[in-house]
Length: 509
Image (cartoon, one colour):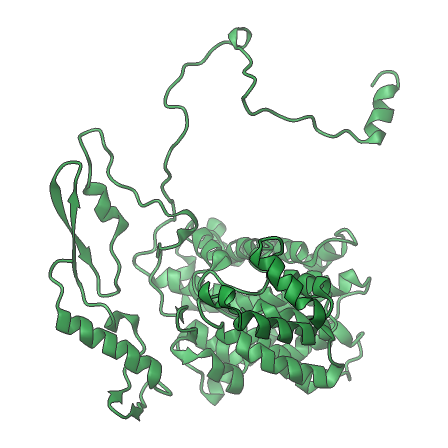
């Protein structure tokens, strides 16, 4: 590193430590903890700017790469490092984007090593304890917690846009009876684009989202309609017609009302279960640049309408490696069966014969802070609906794993999926509906990133580079001159149904 000030580095490290130990309760108040004074929770304080000195041993040339105060370097700066006139310059090969930051964001902060998750600077534990989902959604969207009047206006606007067009409900009802609810949600989110042409840049021009009024209308539309669509998908599974939303209930209460009221307008869900669901919604609302959020920003960078961008995000969340992980936890716990079988299961994991689901995370190398909240929440839910017998297996498995050197050394700790599936199952949700319960609150995170990307001057259409590994050059040969290679990839025999064989057996087919 060139131009690096060691005193500045020490000050930066102290500032981050101060922020973690004595984080301010709000944007203005600060706390003192002994010799450490509270500092704004900004990663920028930790890393002084400077430059990176790079020597290319192929050519002997030396390059200076600027390092920002965010601790980042521009990937395009490496294009100037070339071995000769025919070299296009270095590319950064990063499968899965393990260390690539395509955006700068002020929405969510994660320190995976320390097990820290904050929304706009607020620890997730504090928000889960004292806030509501709609309040958190406002925070994510606009950067600050709302005042009492702002929250009332926010909730009213969302409730006024909770009804879904009848044509969309007809589409949902026309889907196969065994359609996966996430497939229904993806299709419905995409179809909303057709029902709201007034918000489509392809029809109204690319400047349409420069209007704050237009943006905000799409935000409240989606937050209002997401639970209504999800409820319609749930009722479709049960062979029941959709239920109109209620404007007199909280966000989570309204969702449970649509699921359980059977159209009885006097019905009111259990407030404790609604509160538990609200906490789960808070915990799942945002998680920075994960697979589905990255998909939302990737699609939005093309200028496509917000409904199509979020349909793509929900499609990414549909994947079992992303939104379906808690289902895998339930399956694992069911296979273990009882506490007595845990030692054999642990040994099977160590011998790579069994897979441990719900432990470890791409980001967290410590206890997922959301998992701590959910474990406590599980007991509250069980006190109302009854204790799930698998909870004892889960608690004992966690205790066994966290006391085993094999898991501790590899920093494998419970993640948010480990206990959430048990809560959802105890509340009566089928496993295929779990990712939908993930998607409803995550709309707030998607929309906050969409909104942020529209204001970011660095936003460009996302077009990653690639490393080409194919044949360098060959020339076209006429069909009759081509030789069949035994090792080339080719179309396999496509299975033919018995009905097709019957048809082909007839004359004139």
